[in-house]
Amino acid sequence: MKEQDITKRRKLKNKIFHTLIFLCTLFGIFILSILLFSILSKGLKWLSMDFITNFPSRFPKKAGIYPALFGSLWLIILTALISFPVGIGTALYLEEYAKDNKFTEFIKLNIANLAGVPAIIYGMLGLAVFVRLLGFGRSILSGALTMSLLILPTIIISSQEALRSVPESLKQASYALGTTKWQTITGVILPYALPGILTGTILGLSRALGEAAPLIVVGALAYVSFIPKTPFDQFTVLPIQIFNWSSMPKKEFQNVAAAGIIVLLFILLGINSIAIILRNKYQIRMKD
Image (cartoon, rainbow, N blue to C red):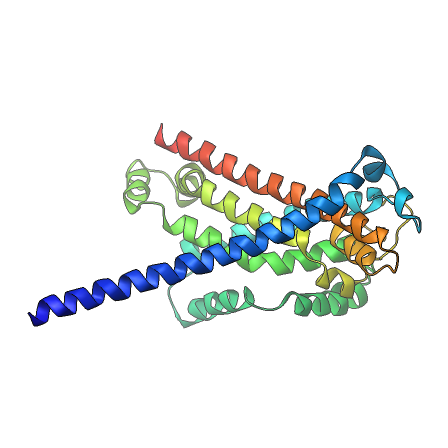
């Protein structure tokens, strides 16, 4: 009887725990639905080609996101070009080349800790190093380097997990055929781990696209009336432009900010969709 009572109590606790988790999930979905409804109801009416192609203006009906959209594209492309090879190279070194010792464990521990550092700290670091010390100024390059530092821990950790998922039997089979370590990495390990690496990288880039605090510190402008043409030009991005509109005294700018949020959400959903498509594509290839 005692064992039956213990089993019943465990089942009851399990049901209560599952119910609490389910209610928490429903609460989060409910709040998200309210926010999305509010944004869509305010911003959909303001979405148009003029909104995409116009420059910012002090008149709500003439305001647009053209410079901010270009600035975001510049930033995300440069950030990807910097962070992708550095992140994968670091993960490969730690997993395939570095010896298991205290120094390597110290590096891995610090990378894991850096993933939890607030974004504003990276902004202060970027201001001190890239803007002032290296003299890049308040440019797109400074912003891209700062955002690369922000997402590198995420890319490195996700790439490490993807590399660890490669079966040891595949590596040993490759070595048995007489291949070198580098040939095994490029021909076996990287293709197998690529879905996980791409997913982590694109999710990290989507985080960089939505960040505003580090770029404010680095010096992204709230108002830009030109299109950036080189990495050394000044810039603004969508999150900062949206923040600027939301602080405007005119009520119409709240609707303009909502329209900007819809565009940003659309881009973020597109990036995440690309991550899912690439992951599924390469997983199917590996199965074949």
